[in-house]
Amino acid sequence: MRTKVAIIGAGPAGLLLGQLLHRYGIDNVILERQTPEYVLGRIRAGLLEEGTVALLDEVGAGARAHQEGLIHHGLELAFGGARHRIDMYGATGKTVMIYGQTEVTLDLMNARKAAGLTSIYQAADVKPLDFDTDRPRVSYVKDGVSHEIECDFIAGCDGFHGVSRASVKPSALKTYERIYPFGWLGILSDTPPVSPELIYSNHARGFALCTMRSTKRSRYYVQCPLDDDIAQWPDERFWGELKRRIDQKAADELVTGPSIEKSIAPLRSFVAEPMRFGRMFLAGDASHIVPPTGAKGLNLAASDVHYLSQAFREYYDEKSSAGIDGYSARALARVWKAVRFSWWMTSMLHQFPEQGEFGARIQLAELDYVVNSKAASASLSENYVGLPF
Ligand code: FAS
Ligand code: PHB
Image (cartoon, rainbow, N blue to C red):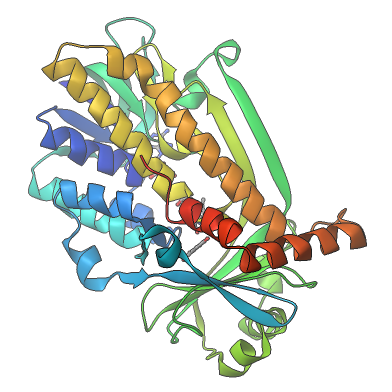
């Protein structure tokens, strides 16, 4: 088989790239090691920046998001027993949309199927090969039979544990990492959200986040020790702990119910540079990871593939390599600003074992400054709604 761009990974990055390339008339194939059901079963991000929604619209996959997504103009920071609203729309003229990554992935899968594009699921042993030559290829095994795809370019959209970045010789990569000494225990429940907007709570017992998927389905997170196991968190314990970490009004109004999903995710900041290796380009979690505190992971995957699809369009339409030569620097400029913001939000809101009383007071001073300074609140807002692509 031959194609112009071989995409490894059918998560949001790979699927959105595939649809953008299709829109520009650039033939592409997606190789995914899991089944579609497995990919859709992963409960992850829940918040889209306007730029991400615009890309879904550009590829004709945004209709359901506009019908079902919840538009938010602000968020609340809770500390010292009180909640403080950040008017993001007032500061930036922009909003964010609550619309789960699962739904984004489904919409993109359906768009790809409707376009009759080739997606190979349960592709085993996928290998990007000869990407440091002008004849790259990708090998894989399907139902026990070995196959090879010849291509012009490879897009590594295979997430943090994928094969693309792992195929680059270590001497060609520079990585930056910070691993946080805690995780997020998240649950989904078919209960009405405790508040119409998100509540990020700094509490001596640990961070908590009240978010949602719809007006009938809530998502909550509490900071937990890295070595905790789900078995230690029966629903009753989760709800009790969440109530202790949010303000009294929210605790009194919280509607609890059986969890329909429960998982613990580790938190890390990670960036691998560069994002291009000859004819292979990395995008999304394959290249960078942010703690979910800033709701940036999925949205960074979107801006990466926006830049990458533009670069490929320039290459094929204008016979120019300027875009592909500039992709890594252009994408990393936005990635690092989101890494900084996600690190800052995580540092301000979580309990760190080594922070001590001084560190706790610095956090409260930072929160007090943010909610009482127009400039500081505007800075949080413009980062949260998404810096320009
Ligand atoms: P993904 O990891 O989504 O997709 C990569 C795909 O590549 C997967 O389908 C995988 O099966 C496939 N793949 C891997 N190796 C392969 C191989 N060798 N061959 C073929 N295919 C291969 N972000 C937020 O903004 N907010 C959140 O609350 C949030 N919560 C998260 C919770 C968890 C547990 C995790 C892991 C991430 C979370 N994220 C969150 C970040 C997440 O949303 C990512 O940013 C987003 O999935 C990035 O999309 P992709 O880059 O497509 O990577
Ligand atoms: C979510 O809805 O899952 C979500 C929202 C905002 C975040 C993290 C997770 O910062």
